[in-house]
Image 1 (tube, rainbow, N blue to C red):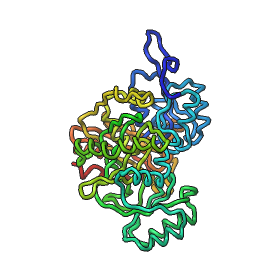
Image 2 (cartoon, rainbow, N blue to C red):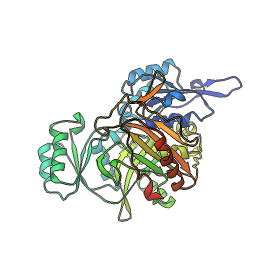
Image 3 (cartoon, rainbow, N blue to C red):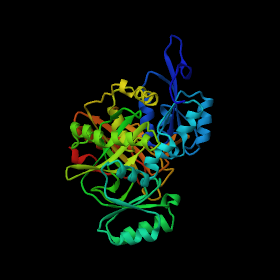
Image 4 (spheres, helix red, strand yellow):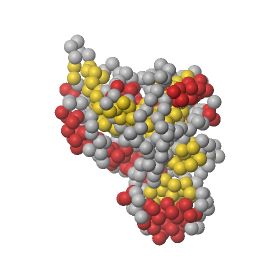
Length: 437
Protein backbone atom coordinates (compact mmCIF):
# COMPACT_ATOMS: atom_id res chain seq x y z
CA UNK A 1 0.00 0.00 0.00
CA UNK A 2 1.46 3.38 -0.94
CA UNK A 3 -1.45 5.74 -1.29
CA UNK A 4 -2.99 8.35 0.94
CA UNK A 5 -6.56 7.50 1.92
CA UNK A 6 -8.93 9.00 4.42
CA UNK A 7 -8.00 6.44 7.03
CA UNK A 8 -4.35 7.55 6.75
CA UNK A 9 -5.22 11.14 7.57
CA UNK A 10 -5.64 12.73 10.93
CA UNK A 11 -8.50 15.22 10.81
CA UNK A 12 -9.12 18.29 12.91
CA UNK A 13 -12.57 19.64 13.71
CA UNK A 14 -14.19 21.17 10.69
CA UNK A 15 -12.66 18.61 8.34
CA UNK A 16 -9.30 20.33 7.97
CA UNK A 17 -6.47 17.90 7.17
CA UNK A 18 -3.97 17.62 10.00
CA UNK A 19 -0.97 15.71 8.77
CA UNK A 20 1.99 14.34 10.68
CA UNK A 21 5.09 14.29 8.51
CA UNK A 22 8.49 12.73 9.16
CA UNK A 23 11.62 13.79 7.23
CA UNK A 24 14.51 11.32 7.38
CA UNK A 25 18.05 12.68 7.34
CA UNK A 26 20.17 15.28 9.08
CA UNK A 27 21.77 17.45 6.42
CA UNK A 28 21.04 20.82 4.86
CA UNK A 29 18.95 19.07 2.19
CA UNK A 30 16.69 17.66 4.90
CA UNK A 31 16.53 21.04 6.66
CA UNK A 32 15.42 22.58 3.35
CA UNK A 33 12.80 19.86 2.87
CA UNK A 34 11.51 20.32 6.42
CA UNK A 35 11.48 24.11 5.99
CA UNK A 36 9.37 23.84 2.85
CA UNK A 37 7.07 21.14 4.24
CA UNK A 38 6.48 23.24 7.37
CA UNK A 39 4.96 25.95 5.14
CA UNK A 40 2.10 23.64 4.11
CA UNK A 41 -1.21 24.38 5.84
CA UNK A 42 -1.89 20.63 5.81
CA UNK A 43 0.98 19.88 8.20
CA UNK A 44 0.36 20.22 11.92
CA UNK A 45 3.22 18.08 13.27
CA UNK A 46 6.68 17.72 11.76
CA UNK A 47 9.44 15.33 12.81
CA UNK A 48 13.02 15.04 11.53
CA UNK A 49 15.22 12.03 12.19
CA UNK A 50 17.85 12.74 13.30
CA UNK A 51 17.77 16.38 12.22
CA UNK A 52 20.19 19.06 13.39
CA UNK A 53 20.23 22.33 15.29
CA UNK A 54 18.38 24.07 12.46
CA UNK A 55 15.56 21.57 12.15
CA UNK A 56 15.04 21.67 15.92
CA UNK A 57 13.66 25.21 15.46
CA UNK A 58 10.84 24.10 13.13
CA UNK A 59 10.28 20.43 13.99
CA UNK A 60 10.75 17.78 16.63
CA UNK A 61 14.09 16.03 16.17
CA UNK A 62 14.17 12.28 16.76
CA UNK A 63 17.58 10.80 17.68
CA UNK A 64 17.44 8.00 15.10
CA UNK A 65 20.10 7.47 12.45
CA UNK A 66 18.96 7.13 8.82
CA UNK A 67 20.60 3.69 8.78
CA UNK A 68 18.23 2.45 11.50
CA UNK A 69 15.48 1.72 9.01
CA UNK A 70 13.55 -0.76 11.15
CA UNK A 71 13.49 1.60 14.12
CA UNK A 72 12.45 4.52 11.89
CA UNK A 73 9.46 2.60 10.55
CA UNK A 74 8.47 1.45 14.04
CA UNK A 75 8.70 5.04 15.30
CA UNK A 76 6.61 6.30 12.40
CA UNK A 77 3.95 3.73 13.28
CA UNK A 78 4.02 4.77 16.93
CA UNK A 79 3.58 8.46 16.08
CA UNK A 80 0.94 7.68 13.45
CA UNK A 81 2.90 9.42 10.71
CA UNK A 82 0.86 10.26 7.59
CA UNK A 83 3.80 10.91 5.27
CA UNK A 84 7.48 9.96 5.40
CA UNK A 85 9.99 11.81 3.23
CA UNK A 86 13.41 10.21 2.80
CA UNK A 87 16.40 12.42 2.02
CA UNK A 88 19.63 10.35 1.87
CA UNK A 89 20.40 7.57 -0.59
CA UNK A 90 21.54 5.09 2.08
CA UNK A 91 18.14 4.27 3.60
CA UNK A 92 16.57 4.28 0.13
CA UNK A 93 19.06 1.66 -1.05
CA UNK A 94 18.42 -0.31 2.16
CA UNK A 95 14.72 -0.55 1.30
CA UNK A 96 13.15 1.86 3.76
CA UNK A 97 10.39 2.79 1.28
CA UNK A 98 9.51 -0.90 0.92
CA UNK A 99 9.31 -1.19 4.71
CA UNK A 100 7.03 1.84 4.98
CA UNK A 101 4.78 0.43 2.29
CA UNK A 102 4.56 -2.91 4.12
CA UNK A 103 3.06 -1.20 7.18
CA UNK A 104 0.81 1.12 5.15
CA UNK A 105 2.63 4.41 5.73
CA UNK A 106 2.83 6.57 2.59
CA UNK A 107 6.49 7.32 1.89
CA UNK A 108 8.16 9.50 -0.72
CA UNK A 109 11.09 7.98 -2.57
CA UNK A 110 11.95 5.01 -4.80
CA UNK A 111 11.99 1.40 -3.63
CA UNK A 112 15.27 -0.43 -3.08
CA UNK A 113 14.94 -2.02 -6.52
CA UNK A 114 14.43 1.37 -8.17
CA UNK A 115 17.22 3.01 -6.13
CA UNK A 116 19.58 0.66 -7.95
CA UNK A 117 19.81 3.46 -10.52
CA UNK A 118 22.04 5.24 -7.96
CA UNK A 119 23.34 2.48 -5.71
CA UNK A 120 25.03 0.76 -8.66
CA UNK A 121 26.89 2.89 -11.19
CA UNK A 122 27.32 -0.27 -13.25
CA UNK A 123 23.56 -0.80 -13.44
CA UNK A 124 23.06 2.87 -14.33
CA UNK A 125 25.67 2.80 -17.11
CA UNK A 126 24.39 -0.44 -18.58
CA UNK A 127 20.79 0.83 -18.48
CA UNK A 128 21.76 3.98 -20.37
CA UNK A 129 23.68 1.96 -22.96
CA UNK A 130 20.76 -0.43 -23.42
CA UNK A 131 18.14 2.27 -23.89
CA UNK A 132 20.21 4.74 -25.89
CA UNK A 133 20.47 7.42 -23.22
CA UNK A 134 23.57 9.57 -23.87
CA UNK A 135 26.45 9.02 -21.42
CA UNK A 136 30.26 9.13 -21.59
CA UNK A 137 31.91 6.06 -23.16
CA UNK A 138 32.97 3.62 -20.47
CA UNK A 139 33.68 0.00 -19.62
CA UNK A 140 32.83 -2.12 -16.58
CA UNK A 141 35.35 -4.39 -14.83
CA UNK A 142 34.94 -7.08 -12.17
CA UNK A 143 38.65 -7.81 -11.73
CA UNK A 144 41.48 -5.48 -10.83
CA UNK A 145 43.79 -7.08 -13.38
CA UNK A 146 41.37 -6.52 -16.25
CA UNK A 147 40.69 -2.94 -15.22
CA UNK A 148 44.39 -2.16 -14.85
CA UNK A 149 45.24 -3.58 -18.26
CA UNK A 150 42.51 -1.49 -19.90
CA UNK A 151 43.40 1.63 -17.94
CA UNK A 152 47.03 1.63 -19.05
CA UNK A 153 45.89 1.96 -22.67
CA UNK A 154 43.67 5.00 -22.08
CA UNK A 155 44.21 8.69 -22.77
CA UNK A 156 44.36 11.07 -19.81
CA UNK A 157 42.55 12.54 -18.03
CA UNK A 158 40.36 9.56 -17.20
CA UNK A 159 37.48 8.88 -14.79
CA UNK A 160 37.61 5.91 -12.39
CA UNK A 161 34.42 5.00 -10.51
CA UNK A 162 33.60 2.46 -7.81
CA UNK A 163 30.29 0.74 -8.46
CA UNK A 164 28.44 1.21 -5.17
CA UNK A 165 27.44 4.02 -2.83
CA UNK A 166 30.52 5.74 -1.45
CA UNK A 167 29.36 9.06 0.08
CA UNK A 168 30.88 11.05 -2.77
CA UNK A 169 34.27 9.30 -2.52
CA UNK A 170 33.73 6.76 -5.29
CA UNK A 171 34.60 8.92 -8.30
CA UNK A 172 38.11 10.07 -9.22
CA UNK A 173 38.92 12.33 -12.17
CA UNK A 174 42.57 11.36 -12.67
CA UNK A 175 44.91 13.78 -14.44
CA UNK A 176 47.84 11.35 -14.25
CA UNK A 177 48.12 7.59 -14.69
CA UNK A 178 49.50 7.40 -11.15
CA UNK A 179 46.28 8.94 -9.81
CA UNK A 180 44.13 6.59 -11.87
CA UNK A 181 46.02 3.46 -10.83
CA UNK A 182 45.96 4.56 -7.19
CA UNK A 183 42.16 5.00 -7.34
CA UNK A 184 41.76 1.56 -8.88
CA UNK A 185 43.99 0.01 -6.21
CA UNK A 186 42.06 1.70 -3.41
CA UNK A 187 38.68 0.67 -4.78
CA UNK A 188 39.37 -2.91 -5.89
CA UNK A 189 42.40 -4.12 -3.91
CA UNK A 190 42.57 -2.20 -0.65
CA UNK A 191 38.76 -2.11 -0.49
CA UNK A 192 38.71 1.31 1.11
CA UNK A 193 35.05 1.62 0.11
CA UNK A 194 34.10 -1.94 1.02
CA UNK A 195 31.68 -3.69 -1.30
CA UNK A 196 31.34 -0.53 -3.38
CA UNK A 197 34.61 -1.60 -5.01
CA UNK A 198 33.39 -5.02 -6.17
CA UNK A 199 33.24 -3.58 -9.67
CA UNK A 200 34.75 -0.50 -11.25
CA UNK A 201 34.00 1.69 -14.25
CA UNK A 202 36.61 3.42 -16.37
CA UNK A 203 35.10 6.26 -18.40
CA UNK A 204 36.24 8.91 -20.81
CA UNK A 205 36.61 12.33 -19.21
CA UNK A 206 34.41 14.91 -20.89
CA UNK A 207 34.69 18.69 -20.76
CA UNK A 208 31.85 21.18 -20.83
CA UNK A 209 29.26 22.91 -18.70
CA UNK A 210 27.69 20.82 -15.93
CA UNK A 211 24.14 21.14 -14.65
CA UNK A 212 21.77 19.19 -12.43
CA UNK A 213 18.41 18.44 -14.03
CA UNK A 214 16.14 17.08 -11.30
CA UNK A 215 12.52 16.04 -11.67
CA UNK A 216 9.51 14.74 -9.80
CA UNK A 217 8.00 11.56 -11.24
CA UNK A 218 5.16 9.24 -10.28
CA UNK A 219 6.34 6.64 -12.79
CA UNK A 220 4.14 8.08 -15.56
CA UNK A 221 4.46 11.85 -15.48
CA UNK A 222 7.85 13.57 -15.30
CA UNK A 223 7.99 17.22 -14.22
CA UNK A 224 11.43 18.88 -14.07
CA UNK A 225 12.40 21.35 -11.38
CA UNK A 226 14.30 24.52 -12.19
CA UNK A 227 17.82 23.38 -13.14
CA UNK A 228 20.67 24.05 -10.75
CA UNK A 229 24.46 24.18 -10.91
CA UNK A 230 26.64 22.96 -8.04
CA UNK A 231 30.32 23.22 -7.16
CA UNK A 232 32.08 20.06 -6.03
CA UNK A 233 35.71 21.14 -5.63
CA UNK A 234 36.79 22.53 -2.28
CA UNK A 235 38.60 25.65 -3.52
CA UNK A 236 37.78 28.61 -5.77
CA UNK A 237 38.30 28.05 -9.47
CA UNK A 238 37.33 24.38 -9.13
CA UNK A 239 40.63 23.48 -7.51
CA UNK A 240 41.39 20.85 -4.87
CA UNK A 241 39.66 17.60 -3.97
CA UNK A 242 35.99 16.79 -4.54
CA UNK A 243 33.48 17.38 -1.75
CA UNK A 244 29.79 16.69 -1.28
CA UNK A 245 29.18 20.15 -2.74
CA UNK A 246 30.34 23.63 -1.71
CA UNK A 247 27.42 25.61 -3.05
CA UNK A 248 24.91 25.96 -5.85
CA UNK A 249 22.66 28.33 -7.71
CA UNK A 250 19.40 28.11 -9.58
CA UNK A 251 18.28 28.45 -12.30
CA UNK A 252 21.14 27.64 -14.65
CA UNK A 253 22.11 30.60 -16.83
CA UNK A 254 22.87 28.42 -19.87
CA UNK A 255 20.06 25.85 -19.80
CA UNK A 256 17.08 27.39 -21.60
CA UNK A 257 13.46 26.32 -21.13
CA UNK A 258 13.58 24.65 -24.53
CA UNK A 259 16.68 22.70 -23.50
CA UNK A 260 14.99 21.59 -20.28
CA UNK A 261 12.02 20.32 -22.27
CA UNK A 262 14.27 18.55 -24.77
CA UNK A 263 16.45 16.88 -22.12
CA UNK A 264 13.36 15.84 -20.17
CA UNK A 265 12.07 14.19 -23.35
CA UNK A 266 15.35 12.55 -24.36
CA UNK A 267 16.88 11.69 -20.96
CA UNK A 268 14.55 11.79 -17.96
CA UNK A 269 11.46 10.26 -19.55
CA UNK A 270 13.41 7.41 -21.22
CA UNK A 271 14.99 6.53 -17.86
CA UNK A 272 11.60 6.49 -16.13
CA UNK A 273 10.13 4.37 -18.92
CA UNK A 274 13.10 1.97 -18.86
CA UNK A 275 12.84 1.22 -15.15
CA UNK A 276 9.57 -0.80 -15.16
CA UNK A 277 10.84 -2.64 -18.22
CA UNK A 278 13.72 -3.75 -15.97
CA UNK A 279 11.30 -4.75 -13.22
CA UNK A 280 12.03 -1.63 -11.19
CA UNK A 281 9.12 0.87 -11.41
CA UNK A 282 10.30 4.32 -10.36
CA UNK A 283 8.59 6.95 -8.18
CA UNK A 284 10.18 9.88 -6.40
CA UNK A 285 12.87 12.32 -7.46
CA UNK A 286 15.08 11.54 -10.44
CA UNK A 287 18.36 13.45 -10.62
CA UNK A 288 20.46 13.57 -13.78
CA UNK A 289 23.88 15.19 -13.55
CA UNK A 290 24.53 16.42 -17.08
CA UNK A 291 27.51 17.76 -18.98
CA UNK A 292 26.87 19.80 -22.12
CA UNK A 293 29.71 19.12 -24.55
CA UNK A 294 29.74 20.11 -28.21
CA UNK A 295 26.20 21.36 -27.71
CA UNK A 296 24.86 17.97 -26.65
CA UNK A 297 24.08 16.55 -23.18
CA UNK A 298 25.56 13.42 -21.65
CA UNK A 299 24.61 11.92 -18.29
CA UNK A 300 27.51 11.89 -15.83
CA UNK A 301 25.52 10.48 -12.93
CA UNK A 302 22.00 9.46 -11.96
CA UNK A 303 20.74 9.87 -8.40
CA UNK A 304 17.54 8.65 -6.81
CA UNK A 305 16.87 11.59 -4.49
CA UNK A 306 17.03 15.35 -4.04
CA UNK A 307 20.49 16.80 -4.62
CA UNK A 308 22.61 18.38 -1.93
CA UNK A 309 23.43 21.32 -2.17
CA UNK A 310 21.05 21.83 -5.12
CA UNK A 311 17.90 21.40 -3.00
CA UNK A 312 18.88 24.41 -0.90
CA UNK A 313 18.90 26.58 -4.05
CA UNK A 314 15.82 25.05 -5.69
CA UNK A 315 13.17 24.77 -2.96
CA UNK A 316 13.24 28.51 -2.08
CA UNK A 317 11.97 29.08 -5.65
CA UNK A 318 9.08 26.60 -5.37
CA UNK A 319 5.68 28.30 -5.07
CA UNK A 320 3.48 25.17 -5.06
CA UNK A 321 2.79 23.36 -1.78
CA UNK A 322 5.53 20.70 -1.64
CA UNK A 323 3.26 18.32 0.29
CA UNK A 324 0.76 18.36 -2.58
CA UNK A 325 3.54 17.34 -4.98
CA UNK A 326 4.87 14.58 -2.73
CA UNK A 327 1.41 13.08 -2.25
CA UNK A 328 0.69 13.26 -5.99
CA UNK A 329 3.90 11.35 -6.71
CA UNK A 330 2.95 8.64 -4.21
CA UNK A 331 -0.64 8.42 -5.48
CA UNK A 332 0.25 8.47 -9.17
CA UNK A 333 -1.61 11.72 -9.81
CA UNK A 334 1.27 14.06 -10.63
CA UNK A 335 -0.39 15.02 -13.91
CA UNK A 336 -3.12 16.73 -11.85
CA UNK A 337 -0.72 19.10 -10.05
CA UNK A 338 0.40 22.40 -11.52
CA UNK A 339 3.90 23.10 -10.23
CA UNK A 340 4.82 26.78 -10.17
CA UNK A 341 8.20 28.43 -9.64
CA UNK A 342 9.29 31.92 -8.69
CA UNK A 343 10.98 34.06 -11.35
CA UNK A 344 13.71 34.93 -8.87
CA UNK A 345 17.23 33.54 -8.70
CA UNK A 346 18.71 31.70 -5.73
CA UNK A 347 22.27 31.23 -4.47
CA UNK A 348 23.47 28.96 -1.65
CA UNK A 349 27.01 28.91 -0.28
CA UNK A 350 28.30 26.16 2.02
CA UNK A 351 30.32 27.06 5.11
CA UNK A 352 32.57 24.12 6.00
CA UNK A 353 34.56 23.02 9.02
CA UNK A 354 38.32 23.13 9.31
CA UNK A 355 39.71 19.88 7.93
CA UNK A 356 36.90 19.28 5.45
CA UNK A 357 36.80 17.30 3.14
CA UNK A 358 39.23 15.25 5.22
CA UNK A 359 38.62 14.98 8.96
CA UNK A 360 36.44 17.93 10.01
CA UNK A 361 36.73 19.68 13.35
CA UNK A 362 33.59 19.26 15.46
CA UNK A 363 32.20 20.73 18.69
CA UNK A 364 33.28 24.22 17.62
CA UNK A 365 30.88 26.99 18.73
CA UNK A 366 29.04 28.85 15.94
CA UNK A 367 28.32 32.51 16.53
CA UNK A 368 26.44 35.18 14.59
CA UNK A 369 23.43 33.18 13.41
CA UNK A 370 21.17 35.77 15.04
CA UNK A 371 22.96 38.62 13.27
CA UNK A 372 21.93 37.98 9.68
CA UNK A 373 19.42 39.81 7.49
CA UNK A 374 15.81 38.69 7.76
CA UNK A 375 15.58 37.54 4.15
CA UNK A 376 18.57 35.20 4.45
CA UNK A 377 17.87 31.49 4.91
CA UNK A 378 20.50 29.42 6.70
CA UNK A 379 20.08 25.69 6.20
CA UNK A 380 21.93 23.64 8.81
CA UNK A 381 23.83 20.42 8.08
CA UNK A 382 26.65 19.50 10.46
CA UNK A 383 25.31 21.26 13.56
CA UNK A 384 24.01 20.29 16.97
CA UNK A 385 22.43 22.14 19.87
CA UNK A 386 23.77 21.45 23.36
CA UNK A 387 22.90 23.48 26.44
CA UNK A 388 21.72 26.38 24.29
CA UNK A 389 24.90 26.53 22.18
CA UNK A 390 24.99 25.58 18.50
CA UNK A 391 28.24 23.84 17.55
CA UNK A 392 29.71 22.14 14.51
CA UNK A 393 28.98 18.46 14.06
CA UNK A 394 30.31 17.60 10.60
CA UNK A 395 32.15 18.77 7.50
CA UNK A 396 29.57 20.83 5.68
CA UNK A 397 28.09 22.94 8.46
CA UNK A 398 25.73 25.53 6.96
CA UNK A 399 24.33 26.59 3.60
CA UNK A 400 23.73 30.34 3.56
CA UNK A 401 21.01 31.05 1.00
CA UNK A 402 19.30 34.05 -0.55
CA UNK A 403 16.94 34.85 -3.40
CA UNK A 404 16.97 37.96 -5.55
CA UNK A 405 15.51 39.55 -8.66
CA UNK A 406 18.84 38.83 -10.33
CA UNK A 407 21.59 36.32 -9.68
CA UNK A 408 23.91 39.18 -8.81
CA UNK A 409 21.46 40.43 -6.16
CA UNK A 410 21.05 36.97 -4.60
CA UNK A 411 24.79 36.42 -4.63
CA UNK A 412 25.50 39.82 -3.10
CA UNK A 413 23.06 39.11 -0.23
CA UNK A 414 24.71 35.79 0.60
CA UNK A 415 28.27 37.09 0.60
CA UNK A 416 27.29 40.16 2.61
CA UNK A 417 25.93 37.93 5.39
CA UNK A 418 28.45 35.08 5.53
CA UNK A 419 31.10 37.19 7.38
CA UNK A 420 28.56 37.75 10.17
CA UNK A 421 28.61 34.02 10.94
CA UNK A 422 31.73 32.51 12.38
CA UNK A 423 33.22 29.32 13.78
CA UNK A 424 36.92 28.68 14.16
CA UNK A 425 38.50 27.35 10.99
CA UNK A 426 35.40 27.90 8.84
CA UNK A 427 35.99 28.21 5.12
CA UNK A 428 33.87 28.64 2.01
CA UNK A 429 34.21 29.26 -1.69
CA UNK A 430 34.01 32.87 -2.80
CA UNK A 431 33.10 32.21 -6.42
CA UNK A 432 29.70 30.50 -6.15
CA UNK A 433 27.40 31.78 -8.95
CA UNK A 434 30.05 34.25 -10.10
CA UNK A 435 29.88 32.92 -13.66
CA UNK A 436 26.09 33.35 -13.71
CA UNK A 437 26.14 37.07 -12.92
